[in-house]
Length: 285
Image (cartoon, rainbow, N blue to C red; front, side, top):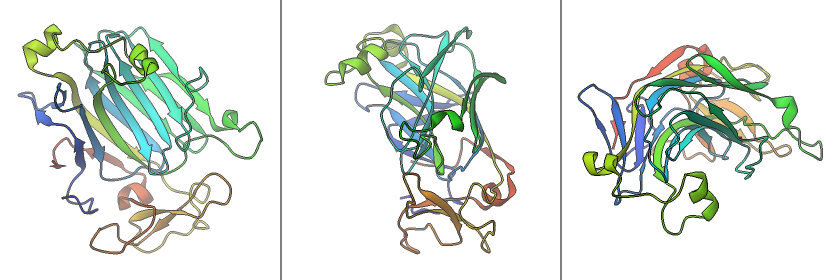
């Protein structure tokens, strides 16, 4: 059982099943029985550059995803729904507010076969801009200043420490909202040749690389001063809509301090802005 000590595991398997291929690739599986697979980093990122190199499934009703997700449901997405293997979709959400408008989601065409070929998908997240890139080429940039709410009271822009998550999940199944089924290209065919041949639908992950941004007085509410031995983020009481983020030296272990709204931090990511390669070993299953 994972108890909050991020030094013991880089990733946890939240649901489903993973395995390593004979090429040392991580395979996330979707079967008729397991309802898909999701893995999450044990450490949280508060701005930085995150790249996943992966191959997608290619079947109607199946969704592949590489996202960041915070405890307040700030979210930044790369997604690949259904049988479309020449495109990827970008999206973002603020505090879990559902908005599927064109201003939030975008489709990026012209990729070579995402099932057969690896591509590098990048989320470059700063306090002021959010850029999605494919194979090193920016395809979309969102400015925080363009997310001001209609009442002018807050920016609907992801700003809280987030875990990195990769998943494959079934959208085309009985009981799913019709809009979700349509978005994913229809219902899953469990007699699909890929499924019959492999016994699963798969997202195949070659690597995930994270370069954490250096925290400054503009990104955290510590008045520009870090505590000794910083190792966690704390969401403080909301001043308005957006949670204020502080860096703490309090424990994130379940058997240590019991903290409200604490996200696991990694010292090198918090204070150093250093490149951190999250290897695809170190799993807790």
